[in-house]
Amino acid sequence: MGYENKKIAYIRVSSKDQNIERQYKKMLELGIEERLIFIDKQTGKDFERPEYKLMKRFIREGDLLYIDSLDRLGRNYDGVISEWKHITRELKADIIVLDNESLFDSRKFKEMGDMGKLMEDQFLSLLSYVADQERKKIKQRQAEGIAIARDKGILGRPKITFNSLSKEQKHIITTYYNSWKRKEITAVKFYEMLDLKKNTFYKVIKQYEESL
Image (cartoon, rainbow, N blue to C red; front, side, top):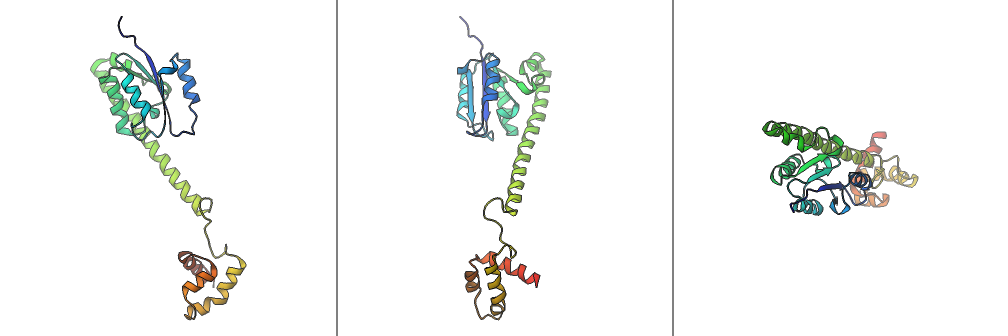
């Protein structure tokens, strides 16, 4: 008896907290056996994922690998292209990307011979680039969101300003400011009286001076 080609699925979510059910249900509906569904719960920045590496050792020539979307394979532009070519051209299996099946079905490209390879390379480069750019945009938006939240005092310690000080702290500043300027008390003593850190003290004092 010869080798019987298999349907295999690869599922990836970015963290252990994310739900795989949507992807998993889709793979079962395609008639893929549970034992042939490989699942990783980690970032797609590289391909050092245990289930992904196991899947590559398991897959054979003529097998059909299903992936829900291209970014489930990975989010690294060069890596996605390299892995796709390794699976389809070296391992001689096929890949179907379910959310873009009309375009990303490696069997169609193989049927076209050398011209198919050229077209496949172009489509892969385009969509992998788009996926990579989207990943970079997401990271940038996250960084910007965190920065804005910090400025608003949503994350970390609230931003301390002169206006946010207690009445007692404001009273200490108005009472001892001139003494500090005349060097009758040290800055260390002054910000200890206010229960502020050095950098915060100078920012608050600057705001106070601007209000005079």
